[in-house]
Structures are given as structure tokens and as C-alpha cells.
Length: 337
Image 1 (cartoon, rainbow, N blue to C red):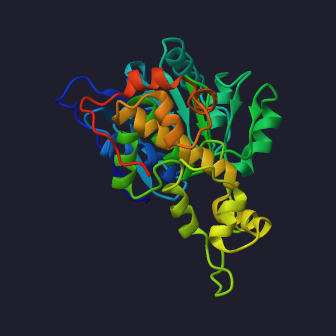
Image 2 (cartoon, helix red, strand yellow):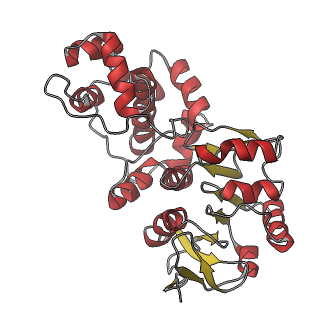
């Protein structure tokens, strides 16, 4: 007889009207895929979000781990969800017609639909990924492409944001996707506070690699890590940093530096610098009255045009529009080196 985890719905928040997130768990659900949205939108979400769990029907749902979780709701609760999250499952068969119908109906009325890991297969069966780019666990990407050739499956990225539809790679990347959504909804300051509470990185860009061939670099006396150099770079983002300068700081050759950097972080030094500069610009836009020109200079962009171009590519909006959307009520200048 499997053990059962009682999954009680979160009460309605007393402040305002929270954004209602409902996870749809199907048989074989992967617990970490479910835990990520439950923790970030549920445990850490109030008062901005409420969180509920639904199944094809209310009651126990078998998990991939061997015990059950209990869904307090059936499919009807998805009719009132603002965001629906479909966690991954060890099963790949086509879901029941009523499940596909409720997802299509929710999408048609404007609900945001997210999948974690192999939850992308459910969205694909519903036709919601047709003609779109999507992510799933790298080990399942080929199968998803074969079954649904109209989908552009990217096997390397952490998550893909297509606006109303968002998909993520395997297990832990569900945390990255949920943080991305919180950042999109409420700004980087709120997302960073949730990340600190959860003790995870506040931002991993969706285009970052799903996995690193050598995720743990052996410690060697003659090959120290580059964390100190990265920390130094964060304090000098306004300067014209490049691989050669960072390599000199680390006292190694540029070629060796670039190789070690990718091995430690899964990305290139230039890509990492761009990520950090965008994050710094977002924080200044949210929390200061500094002009776009000053922010561009402080964050290491060569011009306001360069900032706007990179902002449009990575945040899908302009710096001015971002500031209007996420400007905090009280303005305090943040220290920027």
C-alpha cells in the first residue's frame, strides 16, 4: 500500500486578489517538477499568488517515486486558473480527451500555460506547442521532436518563454522557469527575494545550457576556481571588461580562462557578462531614478542604443517600459561600482 502525502489547497490571500496558479498533476508525476511551482508560487508566493493542485479527478495520484500525492481538486478548478503548470511525468501516453480540452479552453480564454520537463508532451498533445519553440528534458527532446515535428524543440536550453506558453527542461530547471515568471510578473527584486528564501541562484538565463559535461570541477592546487574573478567582475561591470582582462585578473591565459569558465558555469565569459549587465540594469530601472543613459554606462553598455537592443532581445521590452511596469514605490539609489 503506497504512502500518501496530503496536499491541501492554500487559502485565499487576505490582501487583494492573488494570481491563481494551479498545477495539473497526472499519474507518474515527478515530485521535484511539482515541488518547484508548489514552493515558489505557494509557500513563497503570498500575497501575490495562490496555489492549488488538481488531478484528472480529486484524490490520490501515483508519483514516479512510488508513493501518492492527494489532489484536492479535479479538472473543474482549472477553469478558474490564471496560470496552469503541468509538471513532468514518467508516462508519455496521450492524456484523456477531457484533459486536453480543459487545457485548450484555458489557453483560449487567455490563461498562461507552463510545463516542467516532460510536461511538454501534454501541451504538445493538446496542440498548444504547434509552430512554437519548446524545451523539455534533454533526454526526451528527440522523442518530442519525432512525435510532433511541427514543434521546434531546443534540447539545450533551460526554458523557453513564448509569451502565453512557457516550457522548461528537466527537474531543477522548473525552479528557474518559476523564478523567471515571478520576475516577469513582479520584477527582479521580488524574484531575488524569493530566490534568497529558497537558497537558489536568483537568475539563470533560459538560454543557458541544461547541463555541463563536468558539473563539478576537481579542486587542484595548480588550477583554482574562477569564483573570485567572477565576483571581482560584478563590482566592475561599468568597465570595458573582456576575456583578456578577466584572464589577467585570474593570472592565466585567455584560452585557458575561457575553457575553465565554460567548464565551471556552462556558458562563455562574454555571455555571462551580458547576463550580469542586464540584471544590473533591471535592478537600477526598478529601484532608482537614474536616466537610461547613466544606467547604460554604469552597467557597461557602450551606449543607450546597445542597452535597448540587448534589453529587447533578452527581456522582450524596452528599458523605459520595464521601468514603468516594475518601478518600486520608494526610490533609493543602489550602490553600483
